[in-house]
Every structure is written in structure tokens, then in C-alpha cells.
Amino acid sequence: MTSRKRPAAALPKAKAKQANRVANPLVIESPPQSAASEPSAAADLVIITGMSGAGKQTALKAFEDLGFYAVDNLPISLVPKFADITRDSKTGKRAALAIDIREGETLADFPEMYRLLKKRVNATLLFLDADNEVLRRRFSETRRPHPLGSESSVLSSLQNERAQLVPIATLADLHIDTTKLNVHDLRRLISAKFQNQQDANKIIIYVNSFGFRHGVPPDSDLVFDVRFLPNPNYIPEFKPLTGRHPIVARYIRSFPQTVEFINRISELLIYLLPHYIREGKSYLTISFGCTGGQHRSVLIASEIYKRLKKAGFTVKEVHRDARRNRA
Image (cartoon, rainbow, N blue to C red; front, side, top):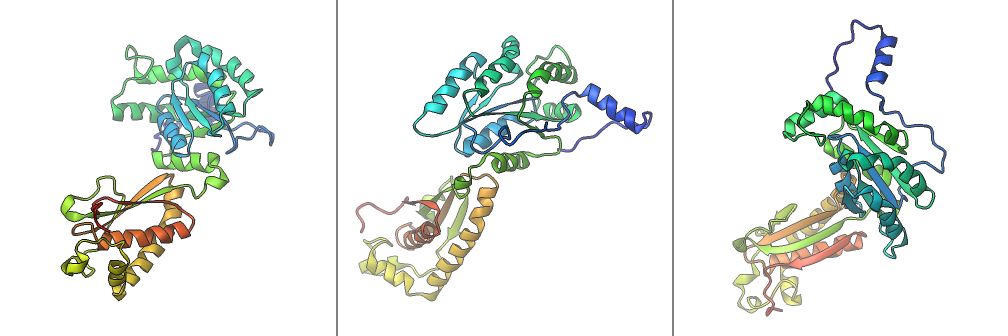
């Protein structure tokens, strides 16, 4: 998302800067803050607001992936009650709310409500903004009308909205200018600001086994084909068993390519997972497939599950196509 600014050749530099401030009173410059008021990962409540098209929905989804309760467009009159419930919750789960110009006339009540709220709740007000021309282009690309209606142009509506949001912008604890950010950049920035240190390795990993003849699990993020390994199904005594049975597992492990595959894939995943976490991913589904989903994929998935669990990750093991009446 890059901004195309109109040339200001007719204006001296100093005057051009001054004109920009007048036209855009919400230029993103975080105000000086004391250590106590610095926005932190420990905030119990984050209120997301700002200009339409600046990325509030992306931000709200990012908070949800960080484990926050995420609520969009909650009436301002209910915010204090919701904040109290969040603060007193025994789950310790934090909350993120999105409030914007859709509130209508009640938006004028927000500044006073927030001042009172800050006295009793650990809250952070996050304001998202972008250049008017970039916002106008985003509305054009998505073909959505501006929340203030379609009676006037998008640019005129943005200017109206910006003027109404000035009192709220001045209260914000954190400003983020998304003019040159894409959705991934914004998610990464929010994760860096609000992710608890103890949650840094918080990603849920699902390790699946499946049979290609039954179809690849549609929710798979990574798929590995283990049909290159010798098939135990051709050995009569192994046919009624699964890869979890000690005899079958020992047979599959007896091949050097099995051991090498498990070692190499484990190392690859342990290398990749921190990068997925850094991108804001909160869960990952890894699927291993063989022909029927009974032997090879079951053994491999079980081994990878153990390796990732030993490495400290939260892992769940699922064997989709292994028959229940098999050992």
C-alpha cells in the first residue's frame, strides 16, 4: 500500500509541511508518554479505532489470533460493563474492541467514557490512520461504500470522518499509520506490541495422518507424502494393524530412509515454526499421507508429534483414516 502524494512544487517546503498538518490533523506522531502510560502487552482491554479503511478489521483479527476476546462495533454505553467483566474474568483472557464512525452521534461520548475507563481498567487506545488518497483507493479497490453513506464522494466522507475523530485521536495511546503497510505488516506490528512474552511460542500444531485414497484433509497447511516408504499393507500379519502397533512401527523404522525422513522433517519444522509464529499464525495443520492412512502415515505422524512436543510446542495428534478396530 503505497501513497501517491500530489506534487507541492508551488509551495516552499516549510509551507507545504504546515499545509499538510492543516489538511490532516491526525498526522501520526505518537505523543510523549511516561513509562506508566506506555502501551504494553499486558493491557487487559485494547480499543481499536481510527479511520475507515485503515485496517481495523485486520487489527481485530490479529488480536483474536493473539488470544483476545474480539468484539466489533460494541455500543459505547456497553464498553465500561464489558471492560469490568473482562477485568474480573477468572480466565485471565484479554479483550479487544473495535469502535469507529459507525457509532453515529454516540461517538461524541467516547472521550469522556475512555478517560473514566482508564482510571479503573488497564486499557490501551489504538488509533489506525492512513493518507486520505490511500484510504480512497482502498475503498475503490474493495468497492465498499464509506460508512457515512454514498450521498457524497468517498474523499469528502473521509474528510468529514477525520474531523469527527480528532478528539479521539488526541487520546490515543498508540498511533499506527498504515499508509505503507500491507495486512501482514500490520499483523506483525500488532503482535510485536501486544503479544505477551510467555505467549511467544504459543501456536497450536495439529499433526494428522491420512490416506490419499480418501482425499487430502482440506485444512492442511503442510502436506508430506510418505508413500516412498515400503508398504506394510502387503505383509499379511500387518494388514489388520496400524502404524501405532509396535511390530508395524519397528518394521517401518527398520528402513534407513524412514529414520532420515523423520530427522530431516523434524529439523525443518522446528526451524519453520518460529517464523510462522512471527507472522502471527496461531495454529498450523501438518498432514502426512500414505495410500490408505493406516500404517506409514500413522507411524510418521506419531514420531513427528513426539519430536515437536519434546521441542516445547503445543501439539495435537489426529489419525483421520486409521480404522478404530485396528490395533
